[in-house]
Image (tube, rainbow, N blue to C red; front, top):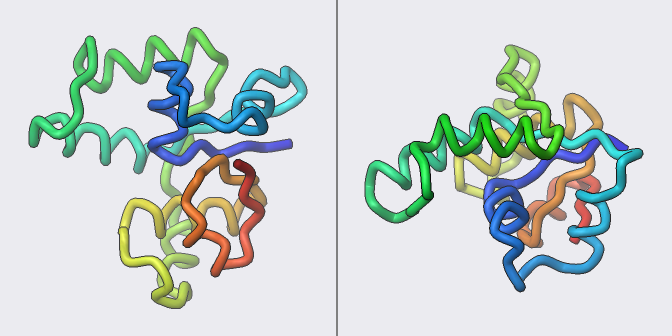
Length: 128
């Protein structure tokens, strides 16, 4: 299964946060799954870090690159197809970062690892 991590899912997985569901943890640890993190999540983390709303032990780029390598997470770039899909999405969810993650899931047939139930309005496959 191709799994796209929502931003909070990535952060919680890296911190082994108690808010993670057992299904989310199992999907992340299952070596048969391909795990992806969108560049839009890295962008979101960088903004929040710059605003002092997110504290990480390293600068965002260093934190993400070391964790991605350590956990075999592939960084997913933003394509024109992803942006074209964003344009067609109904406005169920107003967060632009989440809308792009939803778009990437639709375009590339990913399962999204997220606790955000608002994603379900888009008919994406969400695991939590």
